[in-house]
View 1: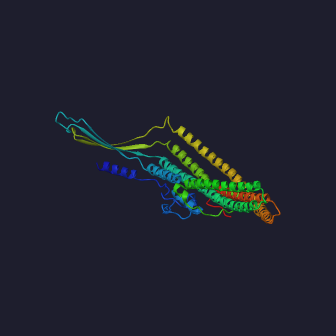
View 2 (view 1 turned 60 degrees about the vertical axis):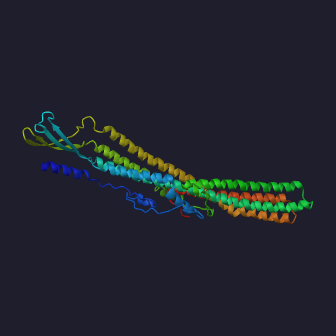
View 3 (view 1 turned 90 degrees about the vertical axis):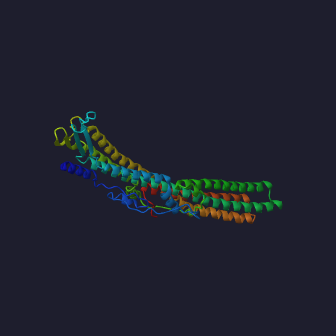
Amino acid sequence: MKVFLFFLGSMMILAGCSSSVSFLADDFDGVDESKVFSNGNEIHAQVSDLSISKKIESLDINKAVEYTIQYNPELQKHKKLVRQIAADGKQADLYPNPTLEFLVEGFHLDSGKGFRDSEITIEVSQEILLGKGKFHSVQALSHEQKAALASFYALRREAIARVKKSFINVLYIQESLKVAQTLKENAFSLVEILEAKYKEGILKEVELLSAKTFLARREGDIVNLLQKLTLAKRQLAADIGNISLADENFVGDLQPVFYAQDLMHLKTIAMRNPLVVEAQYQIEQQKSLLAEAQAKQIPNITLFLGYRRNEASDENTAQIGFSIPLPIFNRNQGQIESKQLSMEASQENLKLIQNNLFSQIGDAHSSHQEVHKQIEILQNHTLPLAKRSLDLAKIEFEEGRQSFLLYLEANRAYHEAQSDYLDAVKKANDTQIELERLLGISSVKQ
């Protein structure tokens, strides 16, 4: 009996053991992603307490990104999935429970003898895991969680890029409104001058109507831009993850940006993109699953130890034995082949991601370079010439040497040049944000 109790206690201790494979910590908000991707180190980070329940006087692009990281529902959902995989890993790291069997044979209920002629058997069995199947299973889940965490950071990059582009769009519309307001003020002043001339009888009515039509169009432009601004703010708030922010005051300057690094350097940086890291961890996961499938070729042994008491003969006997499946037909051949193919497919997937990433970086880099040249032309030539033309046309109109139509056309040309400049600046910002997303970094250095 003492041997039986010792065996039972040993198996309970064994069942409580776990492997040494570690999983990522639960709190991983706001950490440097490089910590995740270096030697599988655990992450320990503090989640900052950020509330958006209070009224905000103004919201800049950095604060918008901060809110996105903390409160975007899509990101919160994915973090739960990462933690779910960690929980699966904890479960897989447990050993199977022992089985206790209690059996009474020959129990005479109606004869009044009870247990006197019966035979009592108590048996405990425990499955012993041979090979390293359990270790590789837990390791596969560990790699899966790291891949999921890399996927989370890729998703976060996507969310940040969307918010930044939406924010730039809001700033773009606000700047366009300023240009439209200025043009409207110029048109209004022109109409006042022409109305005075019309009353003096030195201007035809058709010319006055032409100027008023120009003013009405500018007022229509402003109404249209205000509608666009409302929609853009609503989209920005939705991208951040809180629609109530649509009524906030978004502040910032729409400035031209330029990233001068060469294409080869960008491709080197892109190797740290979370999508690439995710694919690399997926390869490691498939390797562990293949190793697990190979380890399952060695069958597990079930040990059992029992105690039997025969009341009729007053005999006590001990039982000990084991059972093991014979790997004659099923040696896990199909599973091994399947995992081998899955691993090879994951390796090809990494190549596909890198090829697509390099192609997209090349396109974004070319667009960024081209728009930079366009901004230089607009800044150094188009805008100064259009402004000079407008100033001269205004002087000649006020002195009566030119028709107001020339002044009107100069206004329109300068407005178009300003609009082209704002379009180019917006595109420069958009392409830089796209480069940040593709490179998997927070911002590019100027």
